[in-house]
Length: 131
Image 1 (cartoon, rainbow, N blue to C red):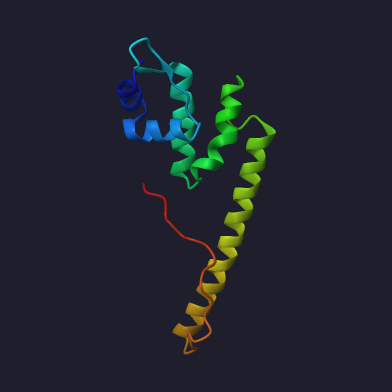
Image 2 (image 1 turned 180 degrees about the vertical axis):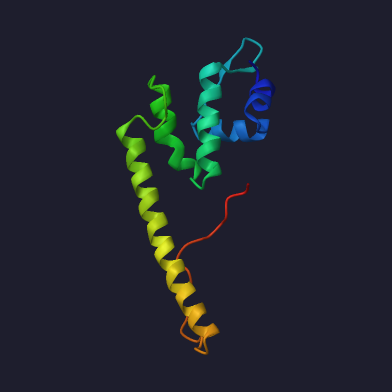
């Protein structure tokens, strides 16, 4: 399938697919006339990338999952390198939750008559998932 069809099937833009290709996350084969050509395995790869990015992973963090799929595994999280990324991400989330809990505690204290003068700032970026 060509790039436009792949983009339509996975719900993204051709620009995003070219970006994934430039990062080495997606590999297009070229036809004799230079068109990009993709297969069903590329649909799985792009869906994996989009799912992970959609829950807050950076594009580079998707690489082990993509490599796992390319190695023939049924899922991108079947490989030890993917599990290691999950573990790092869980640790980041735990740190973020702790930081946000400290900020929440200070805000609660301020509501009860305390001061925000020494309130900690969150040490993580909090971006709610779009629903």
